[in-house]
Length: 372
Image (cartoon, rainbow, N blue to C red):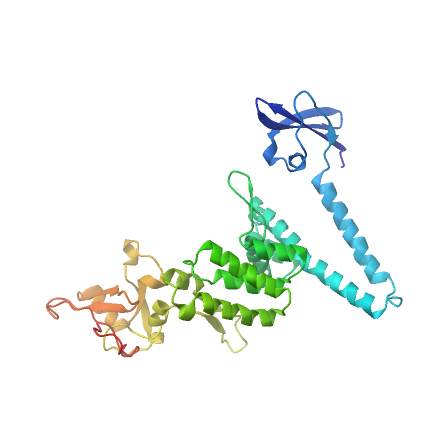
């Protein structure tokens, strides 16, 4: 069933406040709604009229405009698929390629707007999908990895809105603008946003903004593989030897990805470990114990039954025998400042209560003048 809907907009000033009145006629009924002009997209860009100079004008339906644009796009692609290219000379062929690539690069920015809107509406959850990525996999038949990548890209390159309703720049405005103009590709954008996202959080906003703009400028004349090398040199310049990175930065980069199980039952693993995690995974942490990690249990430094978190920084590996030393024989364990697990024996075994670490799995740091 289709219903004809006619919409008219009138802008007025009431007590100094700009207000947009929306008159609509549906069938034989006429209604009127009032909204603050800042949130009326169709009326916002038009100059507001005073109460003594009212003017009615039609307000185009966004849905009609979007559908019309898609129809025009479809017709344009149909034409490009159908028309003969025989009459184009070499220079014209190259020009078509360049122009087509520009438009291809711009299309993901429409993706960003659509995904941002889906996220704001929680459409995926309303339709019982696993969030927006799950909705995209079911709707578009794309892989989960691609769906998640699209949602991540929309999060940093798509439009944003403040709680007050005012529009905000994307997280990476220079990258978003270049992609909207078609001067960089999706792969270029991923290199730039990934590089900027890995910079130390201690860098000031101006430095980060300049770094992004520099990468965007260079991306317009480089292949993505070449841009990666430039990005690596830029990172080394801004954070030489990782001196500015701290635990917050390392925690943000920490990741562990388990791939699809193979026919032989094995699963590939990739990821990044921070120093604390690297210290975590080699074996039992009790001083002197040589039991490897695969024969150990995970112990919560803060007892789980008393609210201890299942956080890799608050857990350690302990073999079955040594686990009883903690639970039954008075030994205590804690995380040291250097990310290494320290054991403290009960007073009847060690009156000094000196914290000790296991150096079997991790040779001692000879540069430390006062090792535990």
